[in-house]
Image (cartoon, rainbow, N blue to C red; front, side):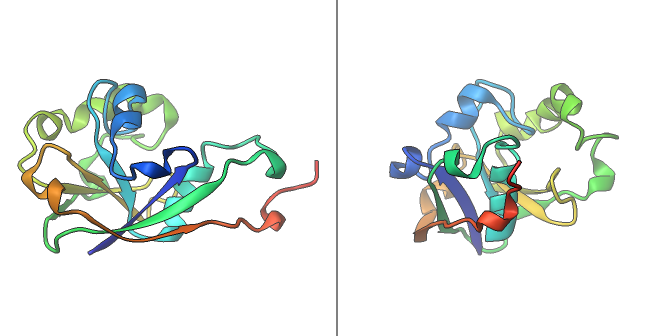
Amino acid sequence: MKVYRILKEPYWHDPLSVIGAEIAGGRWNPPGIGILYTSTSPALALLETMVHFPRVSYDQLPRLRLFTLDIPDGEVRWIHPDFLPADWAHPTALPITQQVLMEWLQHPVDFGLGLPSAVMDLSYNILLHPRHPLYQTITIVGEQNIALDKRLWTSS
């Protein structure tokens, strides 16, 4: 199964690192526990990245690189939105969503979890656990720099 991840320069050297998520935390993990956030498409990976640059001018955007990863088929448990807390996608829900997966974060029985994107809830992100034995089987099968279309930015 192919999954996608976008990184800013200078983090290109280690696309499987979970250090950033471990330091800062994320929607599904509190600080101190690192997991690998990936997406089911390059477009979703880009949306998930760009949401963190809401007021950055085009000329100030960091250089970005898309990594295509291959993970074992059939090793992702998909979580339907109905099984998530109400308002899970709202930014103020982080204290709740960071605890929802605590059992998996501490005891990764499943290699990956597929969860809806807060940016585009019809699409899914896949969280991969670095302490699961299958993490070592991830292979990087592609990488390319991303050239963003300037038409996505307004001149003001």
